[in-house]
Length: 564
Ligand code: FEO
Ligand code: CA
Ligand code: CA
Ligand code: CA
Image (cartoon, rainbow, N blue to C red; front, side, top):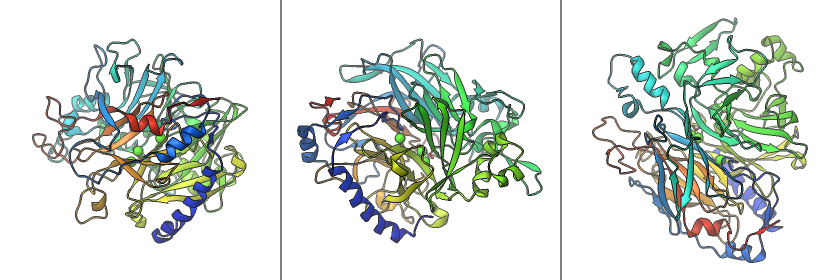
């Protein structure tokens, strides 16, 4: 279990020094599979920083933005942005861009041209006030079917071809790849057994963060799935009941909750999709893949709910997300515990088969003594050390208000190891200048970028612990030079928003970033709390932006990069 908050602070300094010590031994970045978008980029060539690059990185001066509550996207010196896609923008003649964008991932169509490719964007959930005109704060009646249908269209994800010309990314309108995946798209289950009688289920929603596969497909993760069709709850005697959802879609669509809460793979070429049952069912934040030398896959994923768990799947066959073992972490003892019905008597006594273990992964994990964590969010693999970083956003019930970043060191650096060492890499709080870490991304030089997610109703609240941090922000933790290890605020989000889905383009010149839920605290649609991105509609719109500029290029050491 996490130590008390004061202890975390002590640990963070000690751990951090050892982290820095490792870096100074050598700056070779040698991943077999280095990715930057939620480990999101497709594989790029391994690279080594020249001494000139290193020297330049060490000399780099970063200006820390002052915390702000201004309703705008503010950037530190050396960065600029332009908007690529806003909610409701047309992406082809029939389809429009969905709401609340989160994970982004860019895959070039041609490996040799990093300026033209397919952008995947998650649409996590909707604000009914803006999307379906359902005033959930005042309406006495439940939603109509028409309102539910509008909401169902605005979640899922978008595939959009984008191209960079003259330094600006633009949508290739009506490109044949442009399409929507929504809560109504049929999706196959990648599993032998049916679930609630189906091998193909309807739709995806709650799409928070994600990942990318070595075979260049997108992974999108179903997080707070119980908000849309509720959840099946089990009593001690094994009887079940249905817990109702917040959105109430089950009033019109009788889809079982068990069809959601999975990792979903999307083929960018044709939009075909499958849900990976073997990776378990819980509030998946992300899915971060590592390909072993023999091409077996390790997939890390956290369950973003207070006191839930960290998981990894290790495949037994090359490039499989079906055959293999799902493990859950005991971080106290540094053990990955197999969620294997055949081998664990307690699972055999409780569940009827492995499918049920996977559907009820949370209960199975608790039976096996997995460690309860403080809301595991995004996971990234450090391209220099191979250490696994997990953002633990907070756990208000345990008085951890500011969260921390957990570091997992797999034994012998083997991602398929069943043992590891867990420690706190860095704690949130005033001392380090950030609170509630959520998304992480390493850039091409191994600097760590981080976004925060203080909830809308607690941000800028004078009575709460979040006041000093003001608006959610984007931070970078440089790896080199005098600022190494400092947490530097480089972008501040519009009012009520969080930044999500940071993803570097393969050439390292652009950071794609979502701006999710600006104006979320709006109660009267005529008086929104944010007007960002300040277009003619005078309402806030979740959008994807491209952040570019001298600073990104310098951080990515793009001058004289030596490719191995
Ligand atoms: Fe959708 Fe865990 O953030
Ligand atoms: Ca990430
Ligand atoms: Ca998140
Ligand atoms: Ca979050």
